[in-house]
Length: 162
Image 1 (cartoon, rainbow, N blue to C red):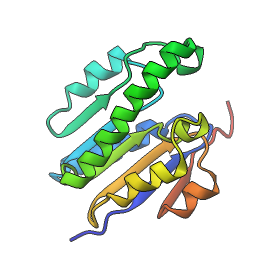
Image 2: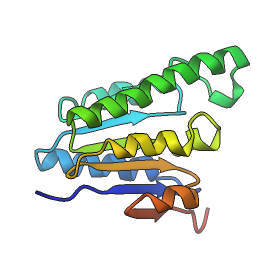
Image 3: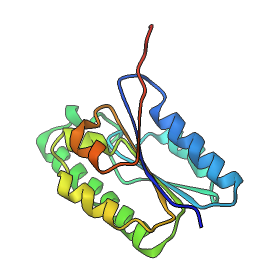
Image 4: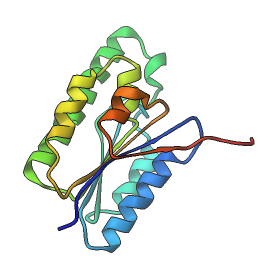
């Protein structure tokens, strides 16, 4: 049985989510089950519709209801979205506990740390639910020392020239 890993794709460059999706496509080609849970990107209707076409090989979830940027929402709407985001985090734990996937992508989960929506202890609780053969990929701009300390691989994606 292959050993699963915890990986991070971070940096200011574009392509972190695309790289994670590429890994999910590779896993699907190998007959493995992938789940992608997207955070902090709003509803993303067009992207969601396309991603749903990849099912059942790759399951895609976005728990947020707003189509706008989280930081531009009113305080009331932010609180509603935080509850939706927490539902997504709980679903991630459930997926890991039940062994529903071989690869779990937590897209933009690191932004939850940056925005104070999730603590490092809460992230660690999710990572602790990982089975030996499950791989978790987390994406976001900043990874930080605490995140790097609990991961096996960290990839920095930066734009060298724009």
